[in-house]
Image 1: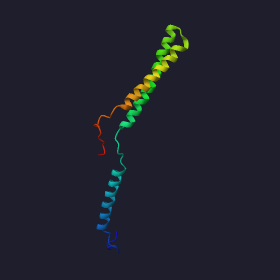
Image 2 (image 1 turned 90 degrees about the horizontal axis):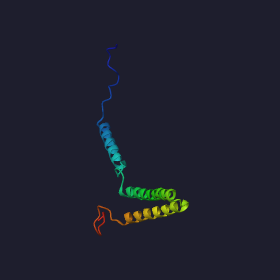
Image 3 (image 1 turned 180 degrees about the vertical axis):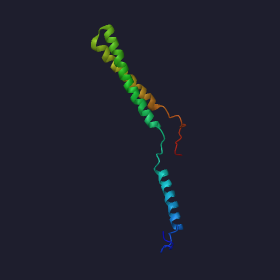
Image 4 (image 1 turned 30 degrees about the vertical axis):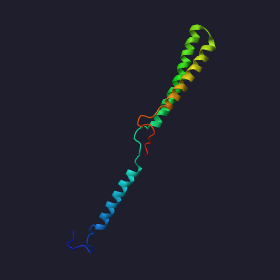
Length: 115
């Protein structure tokens, strides 16, 4: 090893670099906050769409099963199934219309959420 001192002094940390790193860190945190999803979980529109789909499928399939059972018990081959499908579809649309006409839980009469 050499006892000589190096020709150049080691580079010391510059205060400007520390300030730049702090600003970069703050900018990254702001960007993460800005890009974070606003809605956590499912919203009311998604739930009501799922409810409408469940009513529609349940009404049609339930009417079909009941109509098929009536067909097999009474021996009136296509008429029980067709009547069950019609009544199940009508019941499903009635449920969807009733659900669409009800007011959401959080809103009072004549009041908007926005103001």
